[in-house]
Length: 232
Image 1 (cartoon, one colour):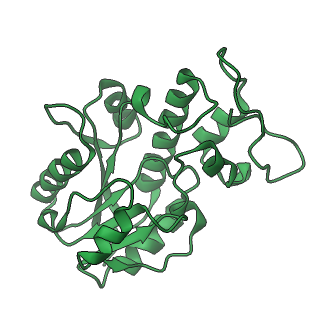
Image 2 (tube, rainbow, N blue to C red):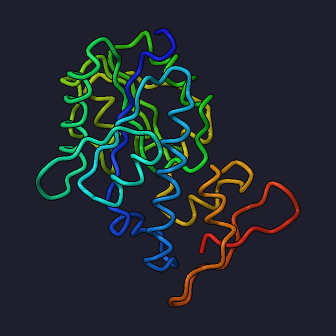
């Protein structure tokens, strides 16, 4: 695939509904973390050489505003939130709008993914009609690559990797740690070094926590001796 030949769909829940498994964070902190990670993911994709356009799939007005401010296109859908339906609709719209492009899906919570990692994964996916990058736990999915929208299957969610592989998706042996570590829990965030986080997530981690019930106080592992606050 040549540079700029991919259109990437990023599904995003409402910030208020996101990161509910991050026990120890207040609702305000969870929403702010989700916003920060989406900002970093979209920003990283827009800087990747192989990405022509980024399409955020959402039903939420706040997510829409953030995505547009980051340079993404937004594909909305009428109806209750449904991750797989939103991705399917966004892929079909992207396929119509960018007819000669390859399609990919990237999760919105890759707090440490970098443009070079996106480029490397898309380059590796080029020879395959359908491919998948699994998460660091080996059960979920962080990136899908497809030749056309009709190749998408509604498997996103717990245990998605197994279902995609059973359906013929090629398992990409991507070693990029930022691309494989999606953040569903505080422990996942603690796996990442502060210096490797995207700028918005790093800023979130460095700000004082919002007022709320007791929360986790263990810091994100710093890339240098100076401590960084939370993720809690």
